[in-house]
Image (cartoon, rainbow, N blue to C red; front, side, top):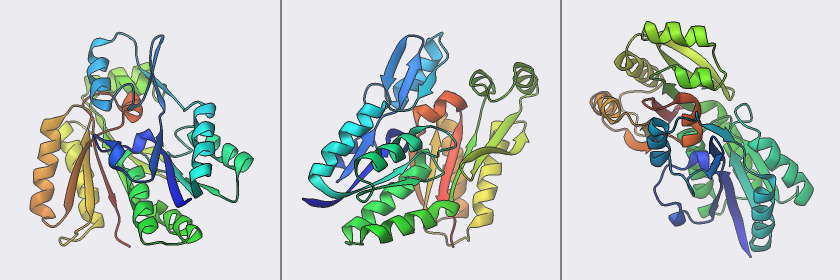
Length: 282
């Protein structure tokens, strides 16, 4: 029997091929267009999701994974591994965490450890990646849990939304607010505090929104920062490239990784958004 498996959700997928992730397993959330439902990543990739947003008249929705799907995977992994560690999407954004906790308590509370990362997308990847590193170095399970929980306040995720219509249709703001915001070309810069979405600043252009995100990154890091910083988008490669070039000049030793932002997150942010994620030095 192997020692430790990682069971997480698909909002943290950043690679095109997850099969190369040793001992990491993903539970898909669902993407819904009208009467059609798709499992994120496995039945509808993020790239295809954003293309579909431009052609499908139905506003997309998302839903948490089926409880039976999580249960089946946990039962399977319990036969193959001694422990399962589950860093998952913020409990403030989805009921996924509660489902994981309920099943862990029901099946094997002494062997399954669920962590509310209070994060999402590339932020969630940081937790999975660190868990992999600790497992590889044979770190005991309780020490892994402690270290991942200690990371929570230091993982930064920011998103600049291009249009407000997706946020309105998702019920986050009123129709009047969205209409006025679009007329004024307001681009809200969102960030995540204790797992909740907050507005950092409202600016008039996408480039200013990008600069706002980068300024927060620069304020939290020094010029010799050599950690990973993610730059992602929902079909906005030009602005993504602008951010990358800016970071290369101002943080030349940073390890820049790109991604297409999770489709489940894109349900609310919509096409054209850009985002950044990094771990604050501490």
